[in-house]
Length: 174
Image (cartoon, rainbow, N blue to C red):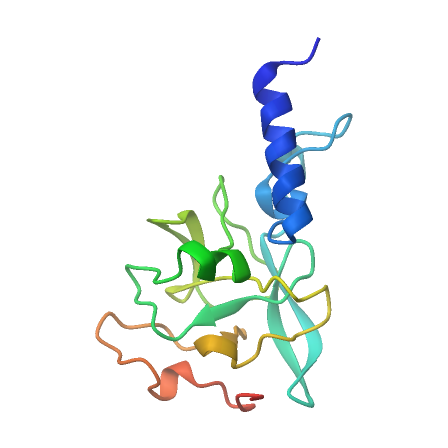
C-alpha cells in the first residue's frame, strides 16, 4: 500500500506538470525506483549552456533540466515580485537543499520569500518560462523578464528597475 502523502504529492506533480510549469527535476521529486535527491548531489541546480538569444549565440544559465533561467527586472535582492498568475507563467526556481552550480563565477544562494526557497544568482531570484524547452529561449524581454547570464551584475536593494544592471548586453528581443 502506498503512503497517502506520496499519492497526493504524485497527483499534485502530475497536475502541475500537465500545466507545464514545473518538472520533476525542478520540484525535487524522485521517480519510483531511483535514488534519493541526496544521491544526485553532484548534479548542479544551475549550469550554463550556449543557446541563441535574440539571434545571437550566448552563454546563459539553465536549470538541471536544461531550461533557460530568467530574472525579473522589478525584483529586489530581498523580494520576488512574481506571484499568482505571473508565477504560473514564470515558475520560480526553488531548491530544498543548498543550490549547486557548474560553470558559474557569481554567487548562487537561496531567498526565503513568498515562493519558498527560491534560488538566486548574484541576488536575482531565478525563474523558468512555461513556453520554453531545453535549449530554446522564448521569453527574452517578455513582461520585464530577461535571460540570466554568468556575467549578470549583482542586484542592489536600491537599484531602480530598468537600470543598466538589469538590461542584458545582447538586447531585449521584443
